[in-house]
Figure 1 (cartoon, rainbow, N blue to C red):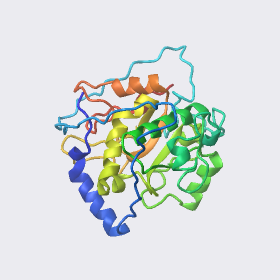
Figure 2 (figure 1 turned 90 degrees about the vertical axis):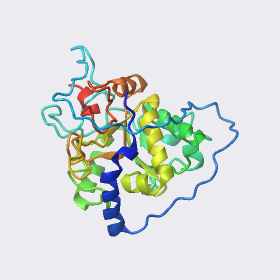
Figure 3 (figure 1 turned 60 degrees about the vertical axis):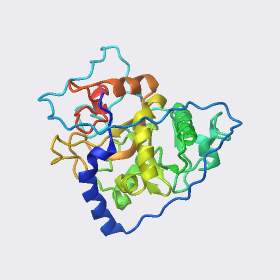
Figure 4 (figure 1 turned 180 degrees about the horizontal axis):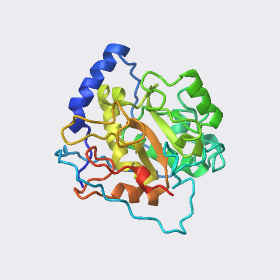
Length: 304
């Protein structure tokens, strides 16, 4: 399988970075400290960073292979339900979460882990990190593993949102300089955040967007690590960057292939087995969904 590599996308993102730098000025840099050498907690699930080689752009196949079809008896749950702009696949809006929503500090494995020590169980804006119990458990393990691999500036930018939260974001236009309604911000009732199984990642006080990834080398390394390891904890990157073979079209500035523009910060929890199935699925060029030249996206696997 060709491994995704940020270096291969540099020509487009160099232009993007220049535009953002002109508009926004120099970003703030979070203070980093050394990861611990000892821990009193049980050993976290660890993942070793992988060396990357730039994929060679190849013409896309005329047709992208369809993922394996689920059996008619497959139950639709928060882990495989489709949430998005397609009204045929999601005829009714999600108004209430499909799982019990809890705060991360109620977890048995919360005390003493990275999110407890460094984030105090809160998102960047000071709100408690919330979601389904299982998702939050795996999120603590993912952050712990990242910590053990030397990353210490990862934060949570956003977690569970109610329908009212999403309506407020739409109405107020409070979507930040890197987001805009309809391209990043999902309509109320069509956001994966309302399931209680999606989170947005930050790097320090900044969103883990392309500005952070390309202007902070450690943030870029973290994103590379995340691509290779998120599925080991049950997460997928819902809207990965996509481009055509010659780089003339991408989903960086418009919703192309993915329903929203690329969101490197947005993770959805599906469970380890399901996320691994999606990660391992390849097109006829042996590319998985994270390869920018593959048209495979996670939403192809979601029911109905």
